[in-house]
Length: 456
Image 1 (tube, one colour):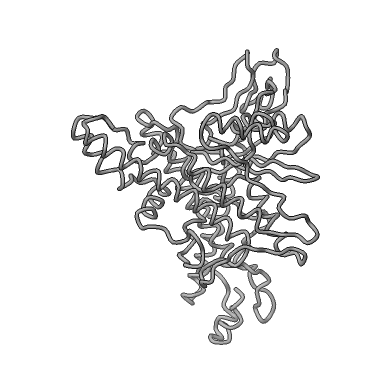
Image 2: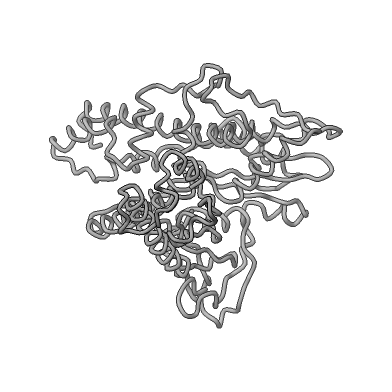
């Protein structure tokens, strides 16, 4: 619309042509048809978004979450075609960017993909090892950070941006929900020998869930720690942030580590600690949204309301974050035992009893008045709202004149030059590469077991 005056200068007949479907000018008629279709699509998308907004859950921490969907600004409107241009010069009073217009079609495509995933999950629910697996994958992959590693193009000046081809193939196949070619030949050989292989083995879920996740946690924690320590503020004492030491991997080493950090939080070593006059603990979690044994969150009369790990098909981090809140930070008591367990949804939503947790990981730090932040991510690279808010706050701080940013940005033209996209991509890439490595280790172990005549 901003180029309409130029179009009229080239073709004067456009200046007086009404924007109607019956226009004798093919260009004007096509524009009217496309614009009308886009307006109808926007109305349809907003209607379906409203239905998702009405689908809510009350978590055991008292917060209310609504079903996830992409966002379109509330003030974004598409006027009637006749109202697009005004004045004798037919200049448009509306400025619609290509991004805002494509957001309408992209949102419609996402809703159709979500419906397709739900239909697929319903068709194969009887044989599925993971509840609502495809819907959970789509919702998780739609979060901030989940696709950041895809946009991290190879740059020799950025450590870790160049990954082996086998790892990139595994990462892409995991993202779009395909069977993994790294596992398929061995698993087919196992089936040929008479072993039963479930589909979640082909998808890599079983091996990633069963594998020791310490490698994924350590790799992504290091990327997060690099992001947090890359900023130096003038007149602020240096070296305040420290990684928690978990010991040497032995029971004796873990016990010694807990004793070293008992003055901060007895019983559990924080992942990142901010020392100084205002101490702060950060707990980093990177969990898989694909659970073979999901908790439905119904609770019981004896224990009250319970967290769910089965809502990821509709709610962002619905399979991970709520349960982690209970384990890491705990929840306060709400209601009374006579009220029955918390009603997460329905007409009585929000009513019921939630028992207070007193044995969570950071109970001692909370008693000391030390604030604790839970930063959650998923194996897709998705970052929780609190994690994104922290990184955005640091990105804003990075532009302040009193702040020095020591981030090693890439020198290639395709590499980001600002704080948030660089570190989001680094964290996401660390998660994706660690899981790809776990898949390759699992493939080697499966091949070795078959060579010995053992079941996979």
